[in-house]
Each structure stands twice: as C-alpha cells, then as structure tokens.
Image (cartoon, rainbow, N blue to C red; front, top):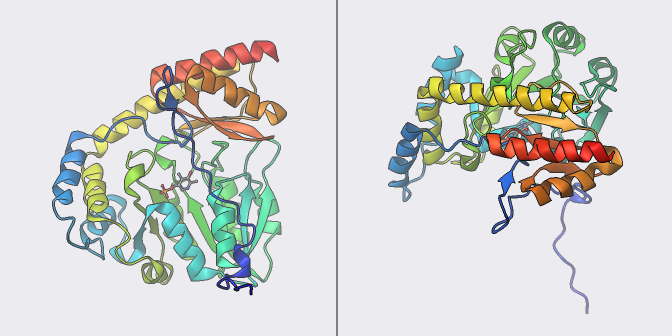
Length: 359
Ligand SMILES: *Cc1c(COP(=O)(O)O)cnc(C)c1O
C-alpha cells in the first residue's frame, strides 16, 4: 500500500536552491565573511535605537502600508507614494513583479551570469527563463537581450551593476536598449548596488523610469544601507505596476523594526553614505592592487570584485578560507569577493598575490 504524496507544481522540479554566502567559520583563526556583499559596518547609533524602540511592540502587527517609510522614500526620491512598493528585501519585490506579470507560457529575459535569484524566482512563476550570456568583458549584452524578445516576453531584468561581475551598462546603451523594448514588456532595473557607483555615465534608474511607464527600479536597504538582516527593499514604478506589487506582496511582510530602521537610515544618510565612500576607496584599492599583481578583472562599480578563475575557482576559494576569509565561488567560473574591513581585504589580497605566483 503506497500512499501518494501531495501534488506539487511540476514547475518546482529542478529549481536551483539559493546558495547563501557561507558565514565565516566560528572558532577559526580570524574569519571574515566576504561572501554576501554585506556592509561590514554595524548599524549607525540612530538606526539601532529606532529598531530597539520598535522591538518593544513585537506583539503588534506592523503598519501594513509602511506609511512612514513610503513617505520618506517619496520625499527622498521625488516620486509619488503611489509609485512605490515595499517588500521583504528587493528579492521579495522581484518575486512580486514576476507574480504580477509572468506565468506559464511567458518568457523572462535576464543576462547570465547575473543575480542567482533570477532563475529561481522565474522558475517558481512557471515562466520560461531566457538567459542571455554576458559579453566577453562580462557586461550585459543588451543587443542580444533585445534580439531575444518575443511575443511571449513579459519581463526583462537588467542588473546594474551586475552581480557577480560588478560591471555596468551606461546611459546611451541603456536608452538605446529601452527604445527597442515594446511598451508592454516590463524592464526591471535592479540597482541593489546603486550607491557604490562612481561612474557618471551610469544612469540613475529613477531618472530613467520617470518617462518610461514600462520601467521599474528595484532598490534595497541590504547593501549600502547595511540592513541585510532586516529584509526591506522597494520598487519605484508607474501605476499600474506599483499597484500590482502592493496587491501581490505578502501582507505585513516588512516588520515594523525594518520599516523604522529604514526610515532612520534615510535620515542618517549623510553618515551612511560617508561609510559607503570609504568602501568605494577600499574597492578601488583592492581593484588596483589586483591589477598590479597581474590579474585581469572587469572594472567594478559595486562593493565586490570578480575574478574569472575557471577551473581554479574552488582552489582559490579554499586558499582564501585557509587565510581567514570566506569568499563566494561559482565553481568552474569565477569568484566574487565582497569589499569588507581593511584587514579582511588585506588578507584576501595577500592570498591573491601568493596564488598568482603559483599560476
Ligand atoms: C543583494 C541583491 C539584492 C537585494 O536583495 P535583498 O532581498 O534586498 O536583500 C537584489 N539584487 C541583487 C542583484 C543583489 O545582489
């Protein structure tokens, strides 16, 4: 007598599981986590205090409309509240975007390799994933992405800067691409690392979206703002996209703690962005040192660097770990290393130098 198990949607078969960056080993020599693109700084005092105050109301549901945060974002970015939607991290918002636009029979285009959540959430939606290889320089191939559009295309992700390569698409090429996308196909500009960009030719998605109703911008508090553990992100999009996002969001998904900490972060923005400035200096130092060591790597505008190591990837990741830094290997392809504390970056650079000599 064999009992049947509950029927699950066939689309879930073979979904890759999201691999979180490994934590630094407890009890190891020194251990730094450079595997998840987190901000190494602890929360600013004002942010911590507002989160602690919110913790006193754990017995209550949060404000479902995220009123305080929505008002703060509307003012900060000069957009109407009706063009905003929040979610459990920008991945939560991205999942709502798919739920709002795509299902079986539809197609979703993204560059590859790019953010590893895209294939997962696309497959969950039931839509067909259409990955388009990056160029030889590890940049989005926007011409090939536009060529991949069909009658069934519903959504296109453009990750700018791209995770895990750190490369960017610039204003002129992005505008040219957007001009080729039909107005009923949604383009999602995923700008998780926006605050780390120093290249003036990289457009601000929030400027791009204003006169393009089929563009949505994703931002997060997880990276530059240092609130990865609180799960809060948002989208800026025209109606009716923003309204669809508010419909499909998990009710009460963003905790009051997250809402209040996000507001406090926006209010402490000068100080926060000062820290981001220090990380950008560190990024430039790490990049230049690697180049001096003889590495070839794509220019990065994010808080990480990408080394295309091919078959040597896992060996190098193991060497980093022995040195006390945990990085993010993509076996057979390359390695993403987050810019962290100066000591952590130095440990990584020493390992890179030694490894380079052995190549
Ligand atoms: C980290 C990251 C996000 C943000 O994830 P959250 O869910 O907001 O923590 C979104 N997109 C990309 C490309 C990322 O790297």
